[in-house]
Each structure stands twice: as structure tokens, then as C-alpha cells.
Image 1 (cartoon, helix red, strand yellow):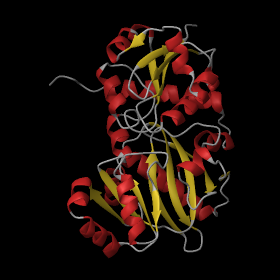
Image 2: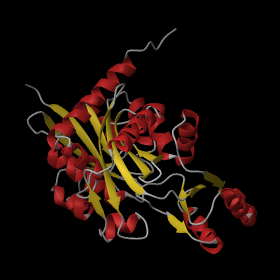
Image 3: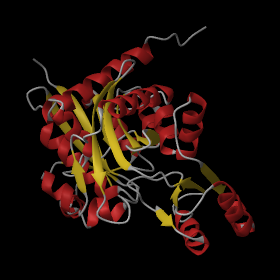
Image 4: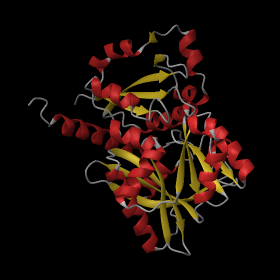
Length: 356
């Protein structure tokens, strides 16, 4: 039987470049080689594309770029990538953050009329922009904490007014984050006005819009979702942050946080989390796979959605594959399902008329 050719994209022009490389290694190591042939395309932080044929460990440790440069591998532009399409059946973007998870690559692939794994343009861009996602959650009736959205131009012309808007709605401590970023890049916890001011300035280094959010007490709980029109939702896991909160350093540098699976939530709260995860997934028009993050207060029985990640991390510490493994769906089967969902979504999109 002829194998399916899968192009895996990794790296990318993003603050999450290194995390993407580590996630890509999981996909490469777990893809079913009896069913799929793999082509690898690495994207540098400057946006240069390379066709990569080296060792997976060099993707993880970051030496893949020197390797392809030393071997004088063909330098790729997006135009050159297009010439490879005749050898590609489906693309698997393992690109976290901007220029990969935000609908840009998805739109590029859609224009090229090639199937790809994961969410489409609308879901990718909407979930990446947390202010847009929160507006959809609010309209859908999915519980979430209060928040304020600040624009860079408003902050630059009136920081005091922006601080007042936040203090009128929210209490300290509160969280500050770029509207478009992932892996907790640029996220801060502010306990007073001075810290809030500095946190806003930090977040504005990564995006032109900033979210200031209510601090929701309780547990940080996550669940994995996959599928298209009728998604499956995994059981839940919880995070015990090693730092003050689950920031980038706690996730990927210090690695002193604990991921506990299963979460141990009581059945009522577990059911609520899974219900809201499916509702949010559908409301954002997600497909393929995603991870939904929540704050859960076991005492008050409150469940608040935090965000949806449309290309969740698949590193050694990442919740997405661990949750499915807990439910009996392990790496090889998981990757196969995600690829199949990509083909299914492509066929669904192609089923609509293009002429009137």
C-alpha cells in the first residue's frame, strides 16, 4: 500500500521557536512509519525555510540550522516550498505562536489547496488572539473571569487612564498578558499599581494589545480535545506551578512544576470542564485538535475558561499527549488520528460549491 507523504513544519518566526522544535520531535518520533513517509521543513526565526534530512535530536537541541547550513542544503523560500507540493499529501504544522499558530500558515496552505492538520484559519487566528476568543466565550455564555483589553496607542497616550480602567473593574492581584502570544510569554502577575504598569509595558513588547485579567483562585486544569464536527474531550489534568504562577520559566526552564493526571476533580466539576471545553471548541470553529485551559475552584464549584490552544505543546512535559495516553490513546494512534482529521476537514471544505 502506498504511504501518505506528510510534511512536518517546525521552528518558525516566533518567541516559541524552541518549544515548536521540541513538539515536532514528539510528532516525528511517534508518527506511524508503516503508514506515513515524512518530509521535514524547518523555519528559522528569520523566516528562512530549509528542507531538513538530519537527526531529530538536532531539531531539539537547536543545531539543525548549523547542520543544514554546513551541508549547503537548499535554501527555501515559500515559493520553493510550493515546488515540493507534488511530493506532499498533507502538511502537519507544528508551529507555536505567531506566524504559525495564528492562521497565517493555515491561510497559506489553504490558498495552495493542500490538506493540513489542525484548526483552520478562523479558529487559529481567533484562538490566538485572546481578546477575540474571550468575546466569543462571553457571547456563548461560557464562564470566564473579568478582563480589560488595552491598546498600545491608548497606553502610550494615557497610561494613568488605562490603569484606572483596570482598577475600576479588577482587584489586585491580576494577570497581564499579550493578546497574541503563547507559552506564557510576556505574562506577569501584578500585586499593585507599580507592578501593573511594568507588566503592561512588558506585554506591549510582544503585541499591540494587552489583556489585564481577573485573578481566578483555584486549580489550573487542562483537557485535550480532538475531532471535527463532533469532538472528543479527554479527562482532565491539573498543574501545580513551581513558581508564583505557571509562567514560561515554570513550564520550560526551571521545570519545577508538576503535571498531575488525572486531576482528581469531583465528577460534577470534571463534567463541567469537559462540557465547556467542547462548547468553546465548537464556538471557535476548531477542528483537528486543541487544548482547553481552565481555572477551577473546588470549594465554590466554579469553572472559568482561560484559553484554547490550537497547536498545543507536545514536549516531554506537555499535557496534550499525556491526557490522551491516560485515556488509552497513545502517541502513534494519536498522530494518525490527527492526520485523518486533517484529511476529513479538507474533504468537508471541498464539498461546498465554489460557483454560483
